[in-house]
Amino acid sequence: MAHRMVKPYNLLLYLLAILTSFFAGLSYAAMIDAGKDQGLAAAAIVLGYGVIAAVIGLIVALFVAHQVRRKTIFRLNVILTFCIAAFAGYFYLTYLERQKAKAESRYETEQGMD
Image 1 (tube, rainbow, N blue to C red):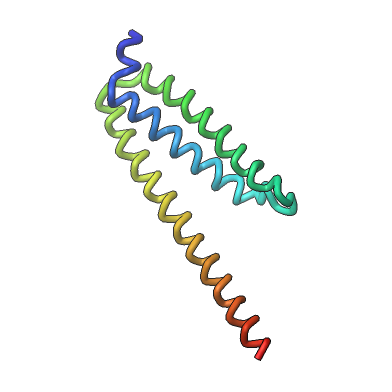
Image 2: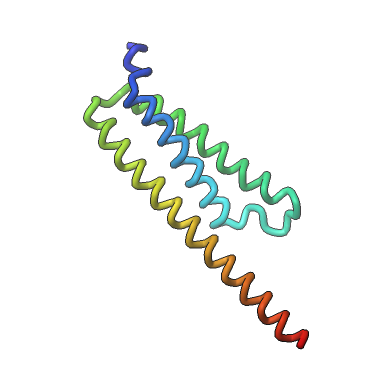
């Protein structure tokens, strides 16, 4: 039974579940403003949410890999890959918005100095 747990498609499931859960934990921390007004500890708090979610995702993936058939695991791998791509796109867009806001505030500051 344990030899099924280390098949390549199961290992991919574990990796994808960890990454997806990590991003979900980061998103959850951002939604509830977990690091707001915490100073330097904000990054550690948000990272902690991501790590805890990643551990939970790994435990769930281990149970899923043990219980379901190979075809279902392949489908889950595809779904989790799309979830990771969606999270990456979301975080990239929020990064671009923050950079644009910084550039605009810098421009306004420079205009005020003239």
